[in-house]
Image 1 (tube, rainbow, N blue to C red):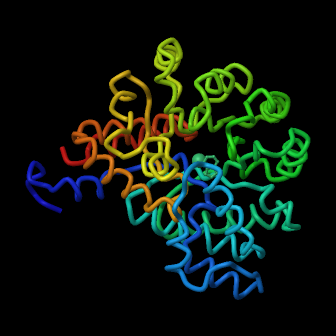
Image 2 (cartoon, rainbow, N blue to C red):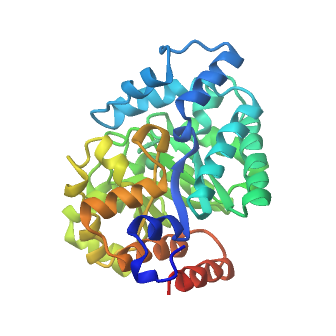
Length: 341
Ligand code: ADE
Ligand code: ZN
């Protein structure tokens, strides 16, 4: 690294920045090459002939057009070792981008509905992240998400399946098709999850209105909002998010790929930061949206002209918003504070 930090290029500053990732769907890190390999191993038919053809198909118009391909791609994940391979590949890439800690979503119902057990999924993921910790030093936590297009009863069954693995799970989340599936639908299951000691998070205000963010806070008692970018449409809500220091896990490349903003230059990240909100940067579904966390930092910096102190703040916010204990957070924040001083 350059001795004179003021001359350090922006790209190398971003690369070396100690990071935490709080919004990554592990199924969304399935690269086409691994998709082909697993399809072959498991005898699963897929609609494409090459990795290039898969990537060419990733032209989305909105969240649903992405979700249709994303759930279809996940059919190749069958054995425990498939989940291991998926998670270990993500951890290797994330670590190489200086991710020190990741809180990783997975969608149990996408697998259990095909006859793959919750145990198969979580055991493969857990083994991979344990190995990644030993090999790369990256820590992680797991967050199963309920699919909001399915029923509250199905979410409750999923919660029950998660209970034997309680010690491996930090929180439960809510994802999938947002419009028409407001948080209120899941108030009871989130209450049950909290009763069992889980933290809670939810996607809200990605495509859905600001009211879904308020519902996630009031009815699901979430500690973080995933996306949340539509909060700016409601100044009172912004003030509440600022006052209560509710973190937003923002995913710039995802937002552009899914048409939430026409271009990265139109993204409201700087307004969110200027409003004093605890915003972090994340990749969401890196294999589908054109990049991992470092690519999100690089693209956002370039499109929005982010300064080094804004980039550093995004990283600090991620450490603060994580579910790490206070001591572990302070170790990482101290590492960040030492970075390039
Ligand atoms: N599942 C995976 N990625 C998602 C996103 N961006 N929004 C909602 N559900 C998702
Ligand atoms: Zn997401």
